[in-house]
Every structure is written in structure tokens, then in C-alpha cells.
Length: 167
Image (tube, rainbow, N blue to C red; front, side, top):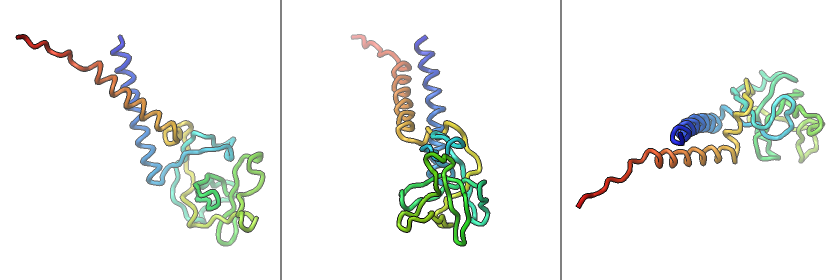
């Protein structure tokens, strides 16, 4: 009975690890980004994973397009939606009006941040709830640890008993 449960858990850990590696590779390749924080609620929540495609800034639509862009003030990637257009870029803001009552700011000029083409990683084309946890730390580490423990347990239960040497 114990061997059966360990085998099932082992195969579950293999599937989780395959998903984990696949999503991490998508993240490294710049095709998928995990959602963190509350600024995009109620549309996107922490743990969602957003898949993007590269886009020309002229294709972005005000109040429709959600983009992933590099914010130079936070020095990280941000997922927000386009709320305005200016000559050389777009203005973005989170959906959550409690945490993001105004558009993202340029803290050196105290005006709205103009997101230019070079800052944009892509436009969100679809997202999947919960799969973002596979990319986020510490969850991806927990999956790896679970996988390694299951490999060790499987090897332990599958080992052959030592043969007695006759003299």
C-alpha cells in the first residue's frame, strides 16, 4: 500500500516538475510572466501567469490592452493596462483604484510615466490562474524539493534487498 502511494506521489511530482520547467523556460524566453501584487485586481491576481506576444506600440488600445513593461523606477517588470496615449508612448495604470488611484509615475518629473516601445516586453494575449505560482519563488523551490524527495523515496522503496554472501 505504501509503495502504491509513493508511486502516485512520484508521478504527480514528475508532472509538476515538467509544468514547472516548461513555465520557467517560457518566462526565461520572455513569453510568460507571473502576476504579483494587487494592482491588477479584480482582473488579474497573484499567481496568474500572463502570456504575451511582442507588439508595436501603435497597436495598443487605450482601456483594452494590458502590457508587460520594464519600469525604470521600480527596476522590475510591471503588468498594467494602457489608459492613455501620448506622442512617443502610452500611459499605464493598474486596475485597482485603491492601490493605483493615478497612472504610473515618472518620479523624477512627478508626471505620468511615458512607456515607450523600448520598455514594452509585450501585450498580454491570455492568462491562466494559479500557474504563475510555478514560476514564483518560493513555490518553484518547493516543487523542486518535493520532486527530489519523491525521487529519493522512490529509489528507496524500489531498491533490491542485499544478497547474503554464503561462505
